[in-house]
Length: 280
Picture 1 (cartoon, rainbow, N blue to C red):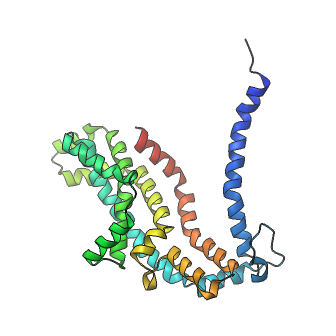
Picture 2: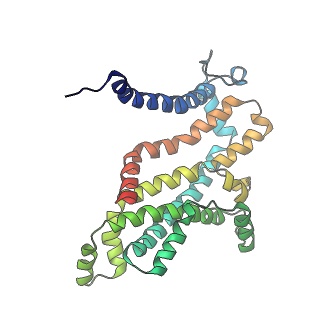
Picture 3: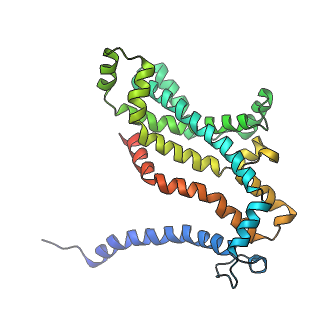
């Protein structure tokens, strides 16, 4: 029996270590820069670097970021936009996925291809803004909710359709023979089985929408309805935050905490949901 050569064994075990090292540097270095800068006084944070603070003052920095940056208002605005968007994406995505998974026809296949085309085709910002203006939804939360729902509905439909196709049809047929209506079958049988994918879609949409600034800038335009990322852009561009990198990075840390908590709680669901929806 031949044994593996020395270089091949080294590469076999060294390759995962190299990948982990590169990933750690790519994520760890920027994260460390943000954390240490958010704890420095203004004089030390003028030129952000990886050095530890000579004098730690994280409490004062975070307090100033929350109070002066109007984070509470931005947090409320983000919730009022993100939460309805997630709910609509889940409800519409689950309903559409059930139809696409159970009905077979050329029209249904064409509709499914059209719905998931959003995974490949980026939204046209100018077209979106012009459409919202014609509908009277520009610079409004309902307009922003509609944009997020349309953007992330394709992802929800894609994962949920793949998952529903793996569910035995006999479960629905047995309920139908017992006299259950389609709405009852959907609510009592399909939705409970969709929990892994629902959790995955919830986390993914929340992560994307919570950190979005590009579409929020064009749709909301700032002001009283500015979300957390958009509010950060506005205060960072104002005279108050010029050269105050310690406050900017403190704002970033506080803004990221809710999504970090959501990701840590549901990270297992992300893997299981993606695997179930895309592979089965």
